[in-house]
Image 1: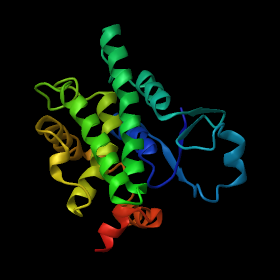
Image 2 (image 1 turned 180 degrees about the vertical axis):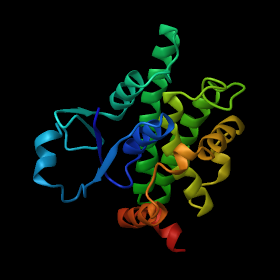
Image 3 (image 1 turned 90 degrees about the vertical axis):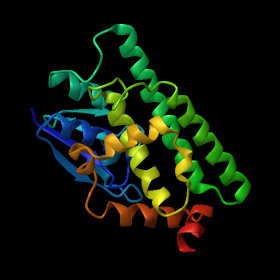
Length: 220
């Protein structure tokens, strides 16, 4: 089966799928586009004008990262999802919550003043506190076995770590179990190799382009 992932170099949702492909050692090709100036063929195959897209055998196109990840998982056993239907449904729900966390993080970077920045920082802290309640012995979301939930949250934690290192957000934003979970995910080769080599430079360039309070802190 020929798999081609259509990507934007700093998109966290694309990164979710790259992590899954990497972890499962699935052969794939990746094509990068500029979302600010996408090629005509992209508009023809992307229903919402978003990435990721997964082209399968150059015939069908799958969109939405959670759906792409489930497809990858289903065609490459063993599964990264729980066998129990209830636990699987709960995992899916927390993956969706992870998408909300990524959007909150993006809104934080867009915040133009201290009041809105503080409000979004508190929203993100509150979201992470909710996740903290779901974590137990670890090192991963479901315990000792990696799952699609882990692939969904690793991009969030990678960006948070970078923002913490630059002093944009405080390390206290993550509670202890979330911090341990983050450490475990960011240590994985599948996660380390899920971004391009110039990712840090591209990410911070993007933050500065947003021209929010976070960009001012980077420049300070």
